Length: 202
Image 1 (spheres, one colour):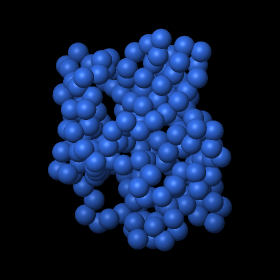
Image 2 (cartoon, rainbow, N blue to C red):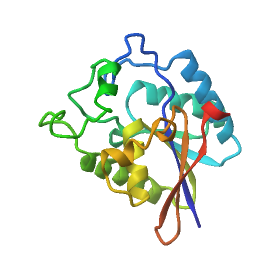
Image 3 (cartoon, one colour):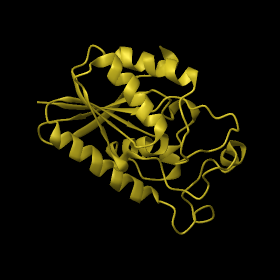
Image 4 (cartoon, one colour):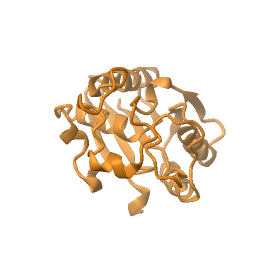
């Protein structure tokens, strides 16, 4: 008996000032983002989704609502704080600066003492994934989170070192908006993960 967790990055955000928004409130989906998530939802229509879990941030909740509407009104939606984006003092900085430092939120030269480490992010998101899997054994579930938490969970499942290189494998290999990573949990508790859909390439 297999459990499927469809780990999805939220849709593209309306961000006219082009900043790294992190946990900033009121960052909502752009029209392009909504169209992308409609494609993601259409891909999932043939799946037997029983529940949707989302980060509490607006863009993730909007993503969950679009998917829920497409799938079924009977699909339940839950909010999980453990799925939230990373905590970093670089929140609000221009993307040009973030790109210049390779989006390195984790090395000591760019971290504030209260910022999350890769290990802390791994612990919270993977604990959440395991809990969701346990509650929904043998079922199919949608989980909506954010770029780095998803990449960190993916690296951990694939037994890669939790380093910047493993979560920044290159632009085309970083999880895209609306992309689905299928986490499959076997009856013996083995985890595998594979990309199964991206609206960018639909």
